[in-house]
Image 1 (cartoon, helix red, strand yellow):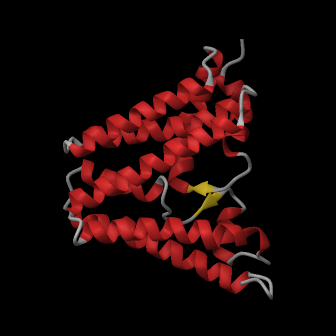
Image 2 (tube, one colour; image 1 turned 60 degrees about the vertical axis):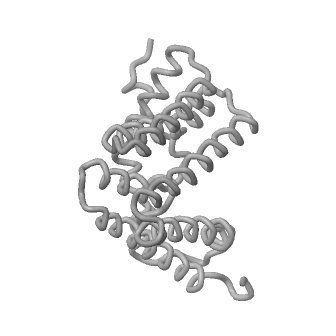
Length: 224
């Protein structure tokens, strides 16, 4: 029977799929996700089981955050993030993937993050800081989905600093759908003043501006 160390490289390749990820994801999430894939495969668990566990932890995270048990909410956020990355990787590693499974995982993420954004906005004050958080998250999501992501494959190059890290599999920045939410929930969890959530929000704004700048600077002529 093979050990985790013997399978680690193959699992990591499946987990990342040659894609670049934010540094906090690679350092804090991927190692645990890789171990989850190893043990789930060894125990014969179907990826659907991992997805259901991810959905369950998502609901528990909602409940803990709503009832202001913020440390518990952060722990369950971390656990569901580990499972979120593990279920798709397990499906590919065990060759049990399907379009339905991919759609299901995507749907769980969409519902979870939208719900979490609304909860954070509510707890931070929807007419002030919370409203700014919610607006920033929605703006980032809309601009990246509708404008940035479709144009990335067409770019003639990338900014020098960003390319340096991309060549090493790391994205520098603070995007939505894990990173901004991770650090925002962490700020709630350790009891810092709510104003500190401005840090990940402003970083996400800068990330969006920089990504938009890259599209404008390096897009081929004739591409809108």
